[in-house]
Length: 173
Image (tube, rainbow, N blue to C red; front, side, top):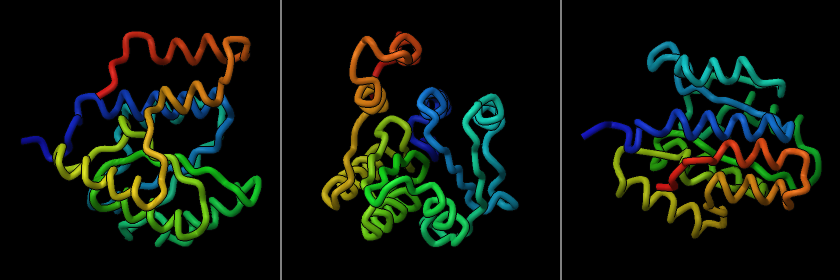
């Protein structure tokens, strides 16, 4: 069994999420869990991040929840555009880092969207129950495609063709 469930599609799904954020100029904050020991962001994703027009902040962390890292909270607070900030969460280890981050963001009063296909974990069951726990706690768990078309709202949106192109031939899990 692979240590990361759906690892074969995760990089593509996360890259698509980054490209979507870039289309809408949505700020991106990337965290790396103990990069000295576990390694930095995988090269394929770093290449995507390097090509974006939207500024990207990369923050190292050793806590499981991103909220345990003061630099992460400072970045979110700096980016807060309104009291009703929406945070979209993607990442690995749904049953550890992702769930702890989501629960703490909810406790802070953020509106949290969890991008289902860009969240994974140690296996399908661990991923399932982590997503369920986040949903029950108040996070919205939905597909990146749903997020994309909520942002687009109409075929008349200037980004509609680019957004559609991100999802051509993509099957949801």
